[in-house]
Image (cartoon, rainbow, N blue to C red; front, side, top):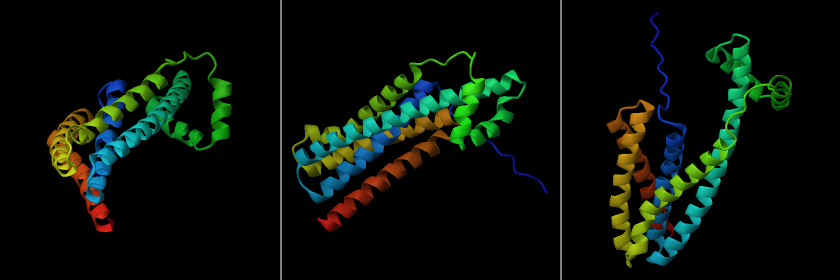
Amino acid sequence: MPQTPHTERHFTGSETLRDIVIGMSDGLTVPFALAAGLSGAVNSTQIVVTAGLAEIAAGSIAMGLGGYLAAKTDAEVAEVIEVFKAYGVTEEDSRPLVDALRERPQSWVDFMMRYELGLEKPDPKRALRSALTIAGAYIAGGFIPLSPYILLPAASNALAVSVVVTLLALAVFGYVKGHFTGAAPLRSAAQTVLIGGVAAGAAFLIARLIS
C-alpha cells in the first residue's frame, strides 16, 4: 500500500525570531479578545485600558517565565543529545531515547549527573534572553489592540478602530509566521486572522449577552 510521505515543518528563523513569534502570537490575540469582550459589557475606555494593561503585565510575565523554562529544557536536551552523538548515535535516532528519559524525571537527572560532565555548556544567558524577548513581544503585540482605547474617548469608536488595526496586524503577523514555518503565507495569514477574529467576536457576544 502506498504511503503518504510525511513532511515535518520546522521554524527556519533564528531562536530570537522564534521567541518573537511566540510572544507576539498571544500578545495580539489575548488582549484583543479581552478588550472586545469588555467593550461588549461596558462603555468605558478607562476600564478597558486598566484591564488591558493588567492583562498585558500578567500575560507577559507568564509567557516570559514559560519561555525561560522552555529554553532551560532545550539546553538540557541539547546536552544529552551531544552525549549520544559522542557514542555515534545520530540526533534523529537519539530523540526517542531523550523523550523517554524526560518522562522519567529521576532517570533524567541521574543520566545528566553521570554523563553530562565534560560537555561544553550552552550559553547561560540564552534562557534569560528568551524570557525577555517573549515578554517584550507579548507587550508590543498587546498594545496594538489596546492603543485605540488609550487614544479615543468613546469605547464604541475605539472598538471599531481596534478591530481594523488588530486584524491587519494579525494578517501581517500570520503571513510572516507562515514564511518561517514553511506553511503557505497567505493561508497562515487567513488562519491567524480567523482565530483572532473568532476569539474577539466570541468574547464580545458573551459579554453583551450577560451584561
